Length: 382
Image (cartoon, rainbow, N blue to C red; front, side, top):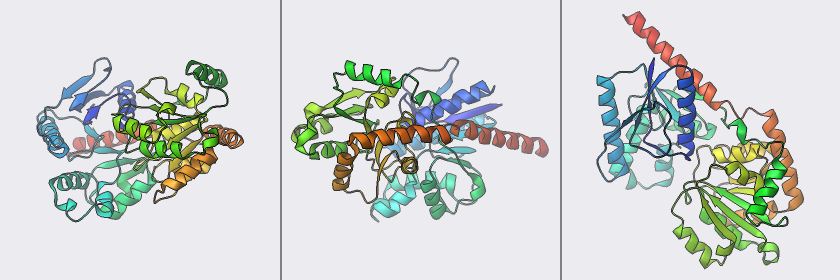
């Protein structure tokens, strides 16, 4: 009944890491013995966590990741388990949770021929192929229909190996009955007037998720009323380049950085609009967290969950290719108070009628079915 969970790095606020923890907790509650392989673990540890800290060498990500997978496969050979579940692409997985975008699609569509001759490309392409190539046995849990199409295009992956999961937002992210009271308290604590418009940016990778784009859009707002617009940044990253950009654009006094937070729901309830102009995003858990909290959203269409914002009529989805002028205009539109009220109402209504919560229970059912199938095959073979 042992299951191995493979994750390169754990830290408390990453979307992938939060998914990992949800699966870990469900597995433990179901009575499975879980062994976790990590290069590093940052943050609180569950009681009785069986953690194998993997020693790695090398400067580049590809060399460190290869050392990780080689070590794990060797350790598993000497210490076998019933099932191997991976949260990063690597050989030897029985089940892979596909939170990352299709590497091959990006390499072919956005990179040069020269890039595809480099060691970095060759490692990551091989790791992805070990999971998705036709003929492999790994079962794949997908969270983005767009990425599923890309994997199918480049690898002709068998449809029966792939399971599309619904979103998996924690119920406690929904707007509570006292949402207005929390909103008022949040704004009072942060000295935000009732008439101020608050933009919220939530991410741990500022450039990837488009913080620079959000800052430029903030600076582009018409002078009349612009002083009443603030941008709150939640998430851990190195902010200096973005601080410098804000100073250059003369909007630094309207931006505040909060780092990683456990009370992010208060920010969703206290803000007026989430701005998420990401450059790449396989899914975008923050989009749905904001949605179920009733927070309108401006987002780029490359995000896997962007279609929920469109279907809910809870904000604006920017078409690709990205144009800064379109984000600037969208932000100006989004700060219209009557429009925000309508989007907020639409978001809360959508959260009540759609399944945005069962990703991990359905994914765990796939993991359990695969474990049972492997055990049955072993018994039959014996």
